[in-house]
Image (cartoon, rainbow, N blue to C red; front, side, top):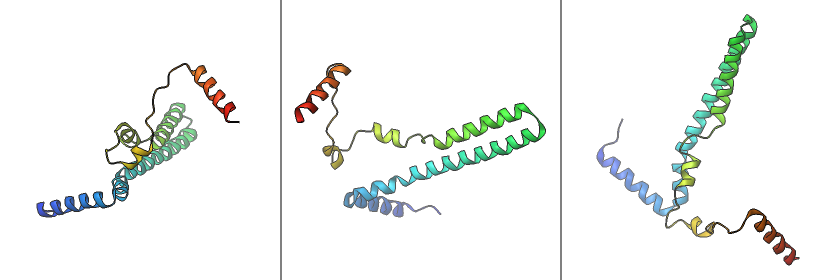
Length: 133
C-alpha cells in the first residue's frame, strides 16, 4: 500500500533529521540497497554455476561435446557475474567528491602528483629511510 503525500513528507523529514543527528548511521542505512544488489548478483551467479554443472553432467552422459563446452561457458559466466561488483556501488562512491562537512575528507590529505620519475622517487624514499636510521 503506497504512502499518502503527508506520510511521504513526514518520512522525508524524519530521514533528514536522522541524517543531521547521526550521519554515520544514515549512510549505513543507505548502503543496504547496495548490499541487496550484491547479494542478488551472487545468488544469480551461483544459480548459473549450478545450471552449468547440470548441463555438464547431461553433456557427459549423452556424449555431446558442444553441450559440455556450452555448460563450461555458462559456469564461467555465472562465476564472473557472481564475483564482479555491481554497477554503481564502490565505483560511484569513489568517483563522487566528498561532502563539505565530511570529517573523513579533512582527515585524508589530498594526493598530489609527485614530480620526477619513478626511479627518482624510489631514490628519495631510500635516502629518507637511511637518514631516519
